[in-house]
Image (cartoon, rainbow, N blue to C red; front, top):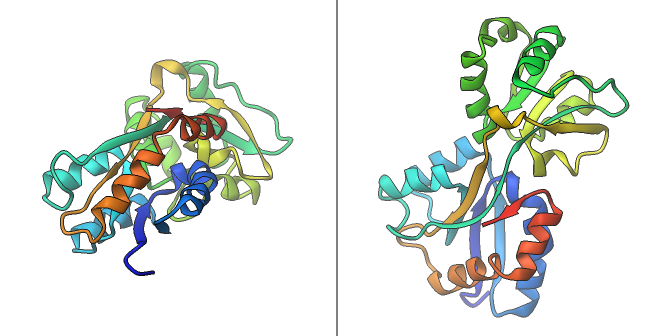
Length: 229
């Protein structure tokens, strides 16, 4: 390794694009990214508990929280890409009406089971369902999942309707992406990089961030369902 390995902690929303781009970064040298994929809640806790990778990639809100807590360096946040929340059903299933907030409420009241993750989309949806007056109706049929794609839960038939970041739903087999949340209740999440205080390789981390903001990287993010920063 000779100090040329960059340790990265990242959340899954960027994984599809990242997995295309990082081999190109590695091949160009002189650094190689060693990446650990961690659910948002766990990633936050691990950094708060004192773990120090060279680079953290997660929601911008999470990066800001860690900066405020003194775990990431002030001014180190760099936005990479953003995405909205999508809605999926099992492949070939009838596509529910999600054309408006009112239609989505009717769809969810009629659904047998609903699932979302513990990540940024799930945190938003929990509040959204409260605002829409759905929390009580959904409580007995809601499955909250950590560390597994919601699409996999839907594909296995464990949830009739699943919600997650669109780039996390797109690669899953056995599901159909019905579409995004209606525009008036959509939540767009920005994903960003940040540098932990006391990381080992600031130069390598900065080089990876720069690579993830190139036109080449932007094209890959778009291809994987994200909007480049």
